[in-house]
Image 1 (tube, rainbow, N blue to C red):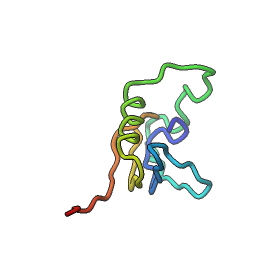
Image 2 (tube, helix red, strand yellow; image 1 turned 60 degrees about the horizontal axis):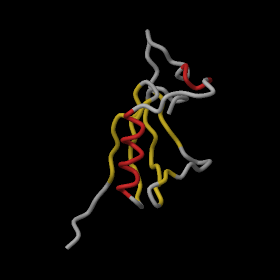
Image 3 (tube, helix red, strand yellow; image 1 turned 90 degrees about the vertical axis):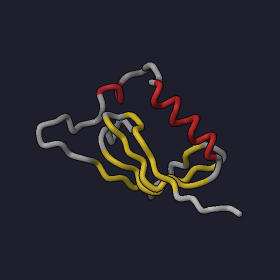
Length: 90
């Protein structure tokens, strides 16, 4: 997330509440004309505080269990929102 900084990860698989980082994982990075476009400065930190947004995102993945995140939006290196496809179970 810090490397992307602003953008979206597409089709992120989740198994048993854990994101599956595979080599073919793709993302779209948003480039700002007058903004910071490089990785977030924390990417080089040896240790950093895990922000509330990241902890909440990880909890939402645990709640999801198995599935796929269709579009996962990242803003300033932090999770912002994501979309999942669902169907009505009868």
